[in-house]
Image 1 (tube, rainbow, N blue to C red):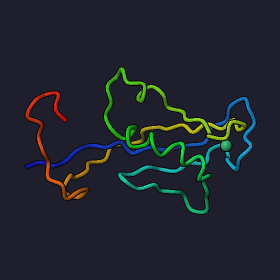
Image 2: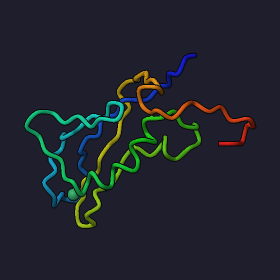
Image 3: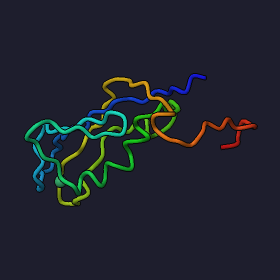
Image 4: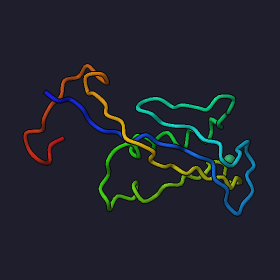
Length: 117
Ligand SMILES: [Zn+2]
């Protein structure tokens, strides 16, 4: 039985706004999301406070979404410091085929009814 599913790889990049950045962000700093992994370029850093604002959004952005879902249209996350003007732009940069069996030991369970989860 085919147990594969598709996730998008993501790029999360610091972008400027008309407000100054007060944290250690630098425009163009980025990291990648590949499957369950965050991949940081060599010799770069990323604010843990900013990461805390981004983490809840990343798994949803990795998955196919309804075209009407705001999670699809909204691509920038604000820095959690209210005095900082930085934004973090999330871009889908590729697709990755994942195997259910390589992600979990819980067996695949097909819902019996359409609305059942
Ligand atoms: Zn900031």
